[in-house]
Image (cartoon, rainbow, N blue to C red; front, side, top):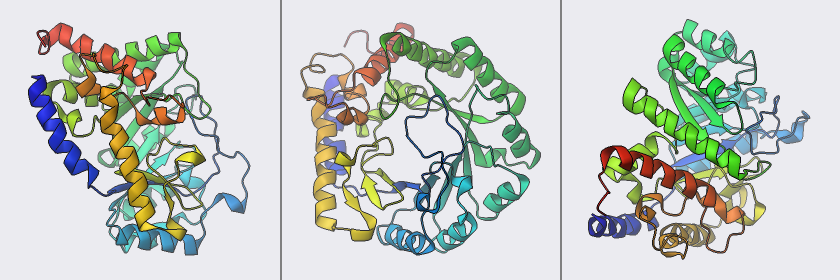
Length: 350
């Protein structure tokens, strides 16, 4: 089994190292009208014009993405629906036939906004906050306008009551029929993760996977469906379920990061408004090389699951861990793979 995996890994590495970005998370505003308990970013709660991209910047960004053949654009923030030039942005971007997704907390989601998003063929990622009693209102609105097939409900598990958390998942699935994406919080930016929280995150992943396997749910996410696919189909070997330098992040200043989860200025690999192609390629190569080299680190060397896990989420580079191994996601990945193997025994003799 492992010899086959190593062969796949070598081929995948060669392809990945020479690949270019195909998706971008574009931060169109620094302003957010809500502070969610699971959010890792320090967005501004004060609204002023410096929080937004200008029309000229929007046009420059669209041209840049088109020139680099990046087709998938995720509009983020802050809260994108606070962006006063959203309609102009969508109009400009529509000229380039981008596949557009917008992430929203739903507070400002109205019939007019949904109709606007429909007009431009946008996909909606609604970030559900179970601590907010009004979180079901956007679900009702989306359902009323028959927009479910263009929407997904995202949830992040951090320190919430786990039974109440899964009660909400069952409601979203059974009562409203939405596709659900569940991820565990990332210990970067303003969030910290202790040992007890980590155990509860693993429990959340297992419970979601059990719903997928036994109740017919289709809960996606890095710690759920992605790990199921890795276990059964070895899909993660292509890049260990990581899209670093394939899915990049661009902030309102044009700074390019290798991943949407990176917040640290030390990880900037370029700038759209002052782009250096040679430097961007060299810095991208560094992150991709690190992605594949980590499996031979001391912490991973003898781990049974190293070729499926790959050392965990690359945001660990912001932890200043010399080996860049992510102890949080490694713990969850290993726990999930062992849970799956206790049921299916595909790697029991490996």
